[in-house]
Image (cartoon, helix red, strand yellow):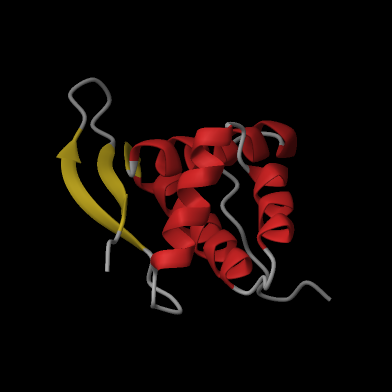
Length: 118
């Protein structure tokens, strides 16, 4: 059953939605922070939390790298994500979503997603 099993639809087909979230995650791990709309940020933060938790649970690095390559596009972002997961002592709460204000063109709420450093 799929009761209460929700995800952000983002007004896109499934393949485009998956590509969008993967691009957001790649940029988040490459730069440490991204600025986007609230719905996209929540979807990216949710997936980032899941990904970091999954790679922290891996005993061997090559298995964690294999998990990262399924989601993240660039090698630089994968290495940054692995380094972040290794040095983090927390078990959750790896990302922070901060409201920035409204965009001038369409009045969308912009937020910043950042990786929290210990």
